[in-house]
View 1: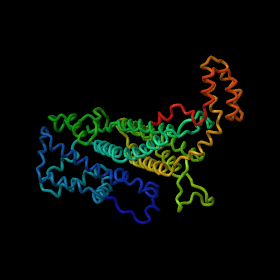
View 2: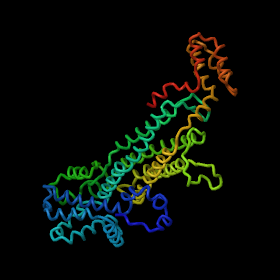
View 3: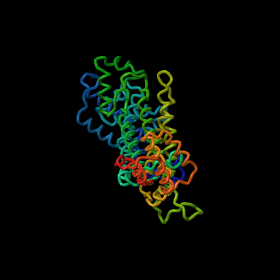
View 4: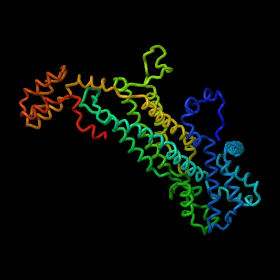
Length: 458
């Protein structure tokens, strides 16, 4: 269990994820905290020992008996804060975090008469990164499946429901900030639904890789001690038992290419949500969205009328922080001097920070979606003041009837002019179009000029 924070913990925390926003990211803290990392390393060490003892061709250590298995089961299920504290105490002496985990298990095995004899097989033939790559692989996979994917799916479902609900609600579009061909609110939301679903599929498809092949990736010690074991096959089966995929050819470390793919996929999700947050913020500023106001909340310290889109702004800021870290992970981790340097170790300890800022931001987007609702009257007023957007339709119909000067005629008519329904209809009447085409254009209005936006949203 995580320790209960002191009353002033959030006030004294160095970073907001451990303070102000601790409750929002607590599920990730359980995985990526120092205690979480230690516990996962211990589980990998125990899984490796169990696999060795279960391997028929591994002669030095016979199969575990029922009593030993029960002891190991109880040991593993009890890996909590006390275990993490003891490992940290051992690390003060060893100055090596993975060795400290091995020594902790050796201490615990010493409590059991027959498991004492198996202490030599703890961490057998492993290098530290055999344990770490497996531990981080499990942590990142669990984070994706148990925390990130459900959180993003919740945001996407809410967006999808809004897109369907408002599929046909006409809205003035803007390109380069200027009035453009009308669309519908539902279709604009559907764009983000499609983007998020596609990028989530990319994230889900990234395999969690690991290696367990010794100090330089060649199984040197493995074959020196037990040449009768098919070690690459054994390693593959062991990693698959953890839900991981074996990287069969590595140096001392797994080269992190998969982790780079994982971070890049997350960063693309974050960028889509930055785009959404900014667009939605703009729609709020235009009055297209109204925000629910809570009577106890203050939008400004001096202007009582304000209801700020704070959730969207909070989301944008945290998405940017997350992507700054994810970008560093993606570019830094796959580059290591020769077999390995230790610059990766301190960087990896911040994985939970990047994921934490993303998770916090996704929750803020979800809160924003619960607070906003469209204002159809405000949208209709903007549409009714933007008859110039129909010049696209008029010039395109004129082109379809062979009028080569259609674009220039509409450009000269509409630029820097106050186009009204009456002035546009007068132009259409004098354009020289066939009767049927003229009648269809005269029946147009900005609110009805949305193409198949409704169908796309649905």
